Image (spheres, rainbow, N blue to C red):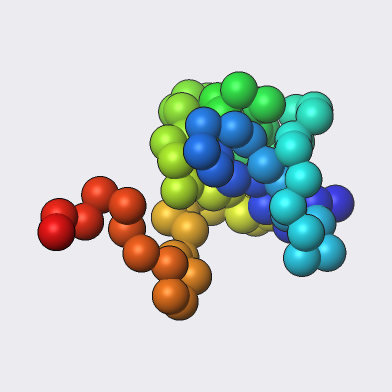
Length: 79
């Protein structure tokens, strides 16, 4: 089982054993939430949402914002 599915730079990725890989098929999380390769998330209650860059779905089905890595600067920062 993959650990999470995330939207990065407009592409769906999965993290398995600490490595990011392109998402190639629909994933079903432990609570029944389904994550599709286009970023569509169908929650166990039937609610449908679309992931945006930086959002991820954990293996328990919880949607959250990915934490920024230390030292990574926001490219939208004004000079």
